[in-house]
Length: 316
Image (tube, rainbow, N blue to C red; front, side, top):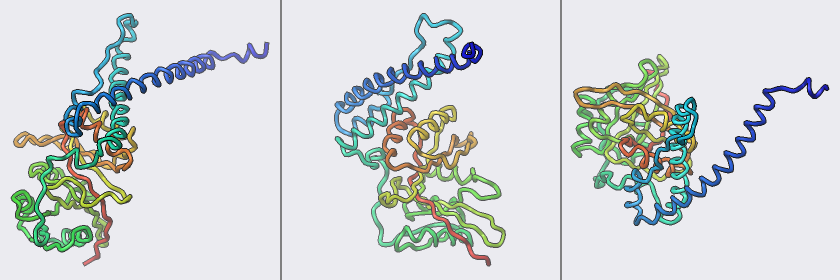
Protein backbone atom coordinates (compact mmCIF):
# COMPACT_ATOMS: atom_id res chain seq x y z
CA UNK A 1 0.00 0.00 0.00
CA UNK A 2 2.84 2.38 0.86
CA UNK A 3 4.51 1.76 -2.51
CA UNK A 4 1.23 2.45 -4.26
CA UNK A 5 0.83 5.76 -2.42
CA UNK A 6 4.38 6.79 -3.46
CA UNK A 7 3.62 6.05 -7.11
CA UNK A 8 4.45 9.05 -9.30
CA UNK A 9 3.38 9.35 -12.95
CA UNK A 10 6.41 11.58 -13.47
CA UNK A 11 8.74 8.75 -12.39
CA UNK A 12 7.15 6.44 -14.96
CA UNK A 13 7.48 9.07 -17.69
CA UNK A 14 11.15 9.65 -16.85
CA UNK A 15 11.78 5.91 -16.83
CA UNK A 16 10.19 5.67 -20.28
CA UNK A 17 12.39 8.50 -21.52
CA UNK A 18 15.50 6.71 -20.23
CA UNK A 19 14.40 3.59 -22.08
CA UNK A 20 13.90 5.63 -25.26
CA UNK A 21 17.38 7.09 -24.82
CA UNK A 22 18.88 3.60 -24.71
CA UNK A 23 17.06 2.68 -27.91
CA UNK A 24 18.28 5.88 -29.55
CA UNK A 25 21.85 5.02 -28.54
CA UNK A 26 21.54 1.63 -30.23
CA UNK A 27 20.19 3.28 -33.38
CA UNK A 28 22.97 5.86 -33.22
CA UNK A 29 25.58 3.11 -33.12
CA UNK A 30 24.10 1.75 -36.34
CA UNK A 31 24.20 5.22 -37.84
CA UNK A 32 27.84 5.65 -36.82
CA UNK A 33 28.66 2.44 -38.67
CA UNK A 34 26.88 3.72 -41.80
CA UNK A 35 28.73 7.04 -41.58
CA UNK A 36 32.09 5.22 -41.30
CA UNK A 37 31.22 3.34 -44.46
CA UNK A 38 30.35 6.63 -46.15
CA UNK A 39 33.62 8.20 -45.00
CA UNK A 40 35.59 5.32 -46.52
CA UNK A 41 33.66 5.69 -49.77
CA UNK A 42 34.46 9.39 -49.91
CA UNK A 43 38.16 8.55 -49.53
CA UNK A 44 37.96 6.45 -52.70
CA UNK A 45 37.10 9.53 -54.81
CA UNK A 46 40.74 10.24 -55.67
CA UNK A 47 43.49 12.48 -54.40
CA UNK A 48 43.18 14.85 -51.48
CA UNK A 49 42.16 17.93 -53.48
CA UNK A 50 39.47 16.00 -55.34
CA UNK A 51 38.07 14.80 -52.03
CA UNK A 52 37.99 18.30 -50.55
CA UNK A 53 36.33 19.75 -53.66
CA UNK A 54 33.68 17.02 -53.62
CA UNK A 55 32.59 17.62 -50.01
CA UNK A 56 29.62 19.94 -50.75
CA UNK A 57 28.14 17.18 -52.91
CA UNK A 58 28.75 14.58 -50.19
CA UNK A 59 26.80 16.25 -47.42
CA UNK A 60 24.19 13.96 -45.87
CA UNK A 61 20.77 14.61 -47.45
CA UNK A 62 17.81 16.10 -45.64
CA UNK A 63 15.18 13.62 -44.45
CA UNK A 64 11.45 14.24 -44.12
CA UNK A 65 9.22 12.63 -41.45
CA UNK A 66 7.87 9.21 -42.39
CA UNK A 67 4.47 9.14 -44.08
CA UNK A 68 2.57 7.56 -41.19
CA UNK A 69 3.70 10.13 -38.62
CA UNK A 70 0.88 11.82 -36.76
CA UNK A 71 0.01 15.15 -38.33
CA UNK A 72 0.59 16.95 -35.03
CA UNK A 73 4.13 15.55 -34.91
CA UNK A 74 5.28 16.32 -38.45
CA UNK A 75 6.32 19.91 -37.80
CA UNK A 76 8.54 19.17 -34.76
CA UNK A 77 9.89 16.07 -36.51
CA UNK A 78 10.88 18.18 -39.54
CA UNK A 79 12.71 20.62 -37.24
CA UNK A 80 14.49 17.74 -35.49
CA UNK A 81 15.51 16.25 -38.84
CA UNK A 82 17.31 19.50 -39.70
CA UNK A 83 19.36 19.15 -36.52
CA UNK A 84 19.92 15.47 -37.28
CA UNK A 85 21.26 16.25 -40.75
CA UNK A 86 23.69 18.80 -39.29
CA UNK A 87 24.69 16.25 -36.66
CA UNK A 88 25.44 13.68 -39.34
CA UNK A 89 27.65 16.18 -41.14
CA UNK A 90 29.59 16.81 -37.92
CA UNK A 91 30.08 13.10 -37.28
CA UNK A 92 31.06 12.47 -40.89
CA UNK A 93 33.55 15.36 -40.80
CA UNK A 94 35.05 13.99 -37.60
CA UNK A 95 35.57 10.57 -39.15
CA UNK A 96 36.94 12.06 -42.37
CA UNK A 97 39.40 14.19 -40.42
CA UNK A 98 40.96 11.14 -38.77
CA UNK A 99 41.04 9.15 -42.01
CA UNK A 100 42.46 11.95 -44.16
CA UNK A 101 45.25 12.67 -41.69
CA UNK A 102 46.31 9.02 -41.53
CA UNK A 103 45.84 8.09 -45.19
CA UNK A 104 46.15 11.31 -47.21
CA UNK A 105 48.51 13.42 -45.06
CA UNK A 106 45.91 16.13 -44.57
CA UNK A 107 47.45 19.46 -43.54
CA UNK A 108 46.19 23.01 -43.08
CA UNK A 109 47.47 24.28 -46.42
CA UNK A 110 45.43 21.61 -48.28
CA UNK A 111 42.26 23.53 -47.41
CA UNK A 112 43.60 26.78 -48.80
CA UNK A 113 45.90 25.65 -51.59
CA UNK A 114 44.87 28.65 -53.70
CA UNK A 115 45.95 31.11 -51.01
CA UNK A 116 48.33 33.63 -52.50
CA UNK A 117 51.96 33.14 -51.55
CA UNK A 118 54.29 36.12 -51.59
CA UNK A 119 57.98 35.98 -52.36
CA UNK A 120 60.19 36.85 -49.42
CA UNK A 121 61.67 40.33 -49.69
CA UNK A 122 64.95 41.61 -48.35
CA UNK A 123 63.22 43.04 -45.28
CA UNK A 124 59.65 43.09 -43.98
CA UNK A 125 57.65 46.29 -44.48
CA UNK A 126 54.76 47.08 -42.14
CA UNK A 127 52.42 49.94 -43.08
CA UNK A 128 50.21 52.02 -40.79
CA UNK A 129 49.50 55.69 -39.99
CA UNK A 130 51.63 56.91 -37.11
CA UNK A 131 50.05 57.11 -33.65
CA UNK A 132 51.05 56.15 -30.12
CA UNK A 133 48.66 53.20 -30.04
CA UNK A 134 49.66 51.92 -33.49
CA UNK A 135 53.35 52.24 -32.61
CA UNK A 136 52.75 50.13 -29.50
CA UNK A 137 50.94 47.54 -31.61
CA UNK A 138 53.87 47.49 -34.03
CA UNK A 139 56.29 46.84 -31.16
CA UNK A 140 54.10 43.97 -29.97
CA UNK A 141 53.96 42.41 -33.43
CA UNK A 142 57.70 42.81 -33.96
CA UNK A 143 58.24 39.74 -31.77
CA UNK A 144 56.52 37.70 -34.51
CA UNK A 145 58.05 39.40 -37.55
CA UNK A 146 61.82 39.61 -37.83
CA UNK A 147 63.65 42.42 -39.67
CA UNK A 148 60.55 44.59 -39.85
CA UNK A 149 60.63 48.19 -41.08
CA UNK A 150 57.85 50.74 -40.61
CA UNK A 151 56.23 52.46 -43.58
CA UNK A 152 54.10 55.33 -42.32
CA UNK A 153 51.01 56.10 -44.41
CA UNK A 154 48.57 59.00 -44.28
CA UNK A 155 45.55 56.76 -43.61
CA UNK A 156 44.52 53.20 -42.82
CA UNK A 157 43.07 52.89 -46.32
CA UNK A 158 46.49 53.71 -47.75
CA UNK A 159 48.04 51.07 -45.50
CA UNK A 160 45.63 48.46 -46.86
CA UNK A 161 46.38 49.52 -50.43
CA UNK A 162 50.12 49.16 -49.81
CA UNK A 163 49.62 45.49 -48.92
CA UNK A 164 47.01 44.84 -51.60
CA UNK A 165 49.31 46.22 -54.29
CA UNK A 166 52.29 44.21 -53.01
CA UNK A 167 54.30 47.25 -51.89
CA UNK A 168 54.29 46.21 -48.22
CA UNK A 169 54.15 42.84 -46.49
CA UNK A 170 51.87 43.81 -43.61
CA UNK A 171 49.62 46.57 -42.38
CA UNK A 172 48.14 47.31 -38.96
CA UNK A 173 44.48 48.20 -38.36
CA UNK A 174 42.38 48.57 -35.20
CA UNK A 175 39.63 45.96 -34.85
CA UNK A 176 37.79 47.00 -31.70
CA UNK A 177 38.10 49.04 -28.53
CA UNK A 178 36.60 48.98 -25.07
CA UNK A 179 34.37 52.02 -25.68
CA UNK A 180 32.95 51.41 -29.18
CA UNK A 181 33.21 47.65 -29.48
CA UNK A 182 33.87 46.18 -32.92
CA UNK A 183 34.85 48.77 -35.54
CA UNK A 184 32.71 47.91 -38.56
CA UNK A 185 34.48 50.32 -40.92
CA UNK A 186 37.85 48.65 -40.39
CA UNK A 187 36.36 45.18 -40.77
CA UNK A 188 34.97 46.26 -44.13
CA UNK A 189 38.45 47.41 -45.16
CA UNK A 190 39.85 43.97 -44.32
CA UNK A 191 37.18 42.26 -46.41
CA UNK A 192 37.35 44.77 -49.25
CA UNK A 193 41.10 44.36 -49.69
CA UNK A 194 40.96 40.60 -49.05
CA UNK A 195 43.44 40.83 -46.18
CA UNK A 196 44.07 38.07 -43.65
CA UNK A 197 44.75 38.39 -39.93
CA UNK A 198 48.22 37.15 -39.02
CA UNK A 199 48.08 38.22 -35.35
CA UNK A 200 46.16 40.45 -32.97
CA UNK A 201 47.26 42.36 -29.89
CA UNK A 202 45.54 44.31 -27.15
CA UNK A 203 46.95 47.69 -26.15
CA UNK A 204 45.75 49.20 -22.87
CA UNK A 205 46.46 52.77 -21.88
CA UNK A 206 47.49 53.40 -18.29
CA UNK A 207 45.94 56.86 -18.51
CA UNK A 208 42.30 55.98 -19.21
CA UNK A 209 42.49 52.15 -19.20
CA UNK A 210 41.03 52.14 -22.71
CA UNK A 211 41.90 48.92 -24.55
CA UNK A 212 42.22 48.66 -28.31
CA UNK A 213 42.72 45.44 -30.24
CA UNK A 214 44.85 45.77 -33.36
CA UNK A 215 45.32 43.31 -36.20
CA UNK A 216 48.48 42.57 -38.14
CA UNK A 217 47.28 41.90 -41.67
CA UNK A 218 48.78 40.39 -44.80
CA UNK A 219 47.67 38.67 -48.01
CA UNK A 220 48.57 35.13 -46.90
CA UNK A 221 46.04 33.15 -44.90
CA UNK A 222 48.09 30.41 -43.26
CA UNK A 223 49.58 30.96 -39.77
CA UNK A 224 52.90 32.74 -39.38
CA UNK A 225 54.33 29.58 -37.82
CA UNK A 226 53.29 26.04 -36.99
CA UNK A 227 50.96 25.83 -33.96
CA UNK A 228 53.12 25.19 -30.89
CA UNK A 229 50.43 24.47 -28.32
CA UNK A 230 49.74 28.13 -27.48
CA UNK A 231 46.26 29.50 -28.05
CA UNK A 232 45.44 29.92 -31.73
CA UNK A 233 42.40 31.76 -33.08
CA UNK A 234 40.47 31.29 -36.32
CA UNK A 235 38.51 34.18 -37.78
CA UNK A 236 35.94 33.88 -40.55
CA UNK A 237 33.14 35.84 -42.21
CA UNK A 238 29.83 34.08 -42.69
CA UNK A 239 27.80 35.88 -45.39
CA UNK A 240 24.50 34.20 -44.45
CA UNK A 241 23.47 35.02 -40.84
CA UNK A 242 20.80 32.28 -40.96
CA UNK A 243 23.59 29.68 -40.85
CA UNK A 244 25.07 31.04 -37.62
CA UNK A 245 23.40 28.45 -35.38
CA UNK A 246 24.87 25.62 -37.47
CA UNK A 247 28.38 27.07 -37.28
CA UNK A 248 28.15 27.56 -33.52
CA UNK A 249 26.74 24.06 -33.11
CA UNK A 250 29.63 22.56 -35.06
CA UNK A 251 32.18 24.66 -33.16
CA UNK A 252 30.73 23.40 -29.88
CA UNK A 253 30.79 19.81 -31.12
CA UNK A 254 34.47 20.15 -32.08
CA UNK A 255 35.29 22.02 -28.82
CA UNK A 256 36.20 25.36 -30.40
CA UNK A 257 35.18 28.28 -28.16
CA UNK A 258 33.53 31.33 -29.77
CA UNK A 259 35.31 34.52 -28.72
CA UNK A 260 33.77 37.13 -31.03
CA UNK A 261 30.39 37.23 -32.76
CA UNK A 262 29.67 40.48 -34.59
CA UNK A 263 26.96 41.19 -37.12
CA UNK A 264 28.61 43.33 -39.78
CA UNK A 265 25.88 45.53 -41.30
CA UNK A 266 25.52 45.07 -45.03
CA UNK A 267 27.15 47.71 -47.21
CA UNK A 268 24.73 48.11 -50.13
CA UNK A 269 27.34 49.81 -52.31
CA UNK A 270 30.10 47.24 -51.85
CA UNK A 271 28.02 44.21 -50.89
CA UNK A 272 30.03 43.60 -47.72
CA UNK A 273 28.17 42.16 -44.77
CA UNK A 274 27.63 39.03 -42.71
CA UNK A 275 28.67 37.62 -39.36
CA UNK A 276 32.26 38.10 -38.20
CA UNK A 277 33.32 35.16 -36.02
CA UNK A 278 36.45 34.34 -34.05
CA UNK A 279 37.03 30.97 -32.37
CA UNK A 280 39.67 29.81 -29.93
CA UNK A 281 40.76 26.55 -31.52
CA UNK A 282 41.14 23.07 -30.14
CA UNK A 283 44.03 21.90 -32.38
CA UNK A 284 43.13 18.21 -32.37
CA UNK A 285 39.72 18.97 -33.93
CA UNK A 286 40.73 21.77 -36.29
CA UNK A 287 40.75 19.71 -39.49
CA UNK A 288 37.36 18.16 -38.72
CA UNK A 289 35.86 21.62 -38.19
CA UNK A 290 37.34 22.87 -41.48
CA UNK A 291 35.98 19.78 -43.24
CA UNK A 292 32.54 20.56 -41.85
CA UNK A 293 32.77 24.15 -43.11
CA UNK A 294 33.97 22.95 -46.53
CA UNK A 295 31.05 20.53 -46.69
CA UNK A 296 28.25 22.68 -45.31
CA UNK A 297 29.34 26.29 -45.90
CA UNK A 298 31.80 26.40 -48.81
CA UNK A 299 30.95 30.07 -49.41
CA UNK A 300 32.33 31.33 -46.07
CA UNK A 301 35.41 33.59 -46.09
CA UNK A 302 38.39 32.51 -43.95
CA UNK A 303 40.05 35.59 -42.47
CA UNK A 304 43.05 34.21 -40.62
CA UNK A 305 44.68 31.86 -38.14
CA UNK A 306 46.37 33.98 -35.54
CA UNK A 307 47.69 34.32 -31.99
CA UNK A 308 46.71 37.18 -29.69
CA UNK A 309 49.27 39.23 -27.77
CA UNK A 310 48.51 41.20 -24.60
CA UNK A 311 50.46 44.45 -24.13
CA UNK A 312 50.32 47.38 -21.72
CA UNK A 313 50.89 50.80 -23.26
CA UNK A 314 52.81 53.20 -21.06
CA UNK A 315 51.32 56.56 -20.22
CA UNK A 316 52.62 59.62 -21.97
